Length: 211
Ligand SMILES: [Fe+2]
Image 1 (cartoon, rainbow, N blue to C red):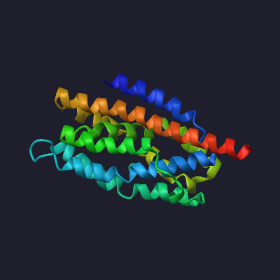
Image 2 (image 1 turned 180 degrees about the vertical axis):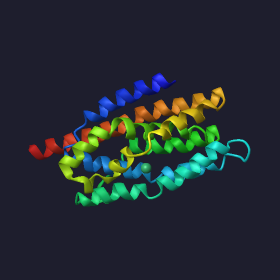
Image 3 (image 1 turned 180 degrees about the horizontal axis):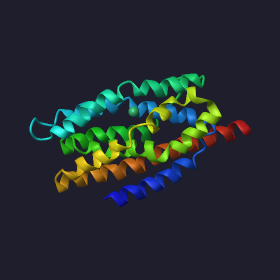
Image 4 (image 1 turned 90 degrees about the vertical axis):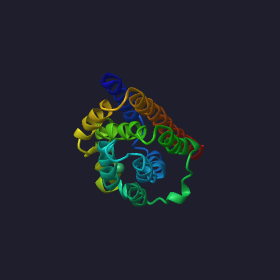
């Protein structure tokens, strides 16, 4: 599975780096949509945790529990970057695709008894480390470090997290692994669609104002 993961990350990296990060309307809406789905990260982890029973999924329990502390308040960093750009979250609509992105996780958690969420987490952790470092450099140059804290914090995450997640996945049953990988690739596709929608809206806005 590692080669599929690497191939997906390569595709995502190319896609992400080709987005117009220097366009402030694009970047601000990216932060707004990110805020909307990151608000659910700790809640999703909490929902999964309740399924991991003592002496059964102890490793996953510990991982998800620690991750809740790591993730706590991360949505506030995205919100703060947005504010520093002089924008208010209330003026940003949450796209249907953004809702679909995180709402589907609640369903998958119920269906898989918590484990499938690992695919969602793994994708988001892996792209931060592998796909966003060059983008962060561009954001620093365009907006300054203070307005790029959300991505800065995430690209600096420990790369060993991804390897550890892979080890934990390998210990699970075949059907559980399949659920996780299905979710990993679904998350990748939906994440691309969220970003595509943000890009389209920034383009429409620019065309309207140029006319
Ligand atoms: Fe985070």
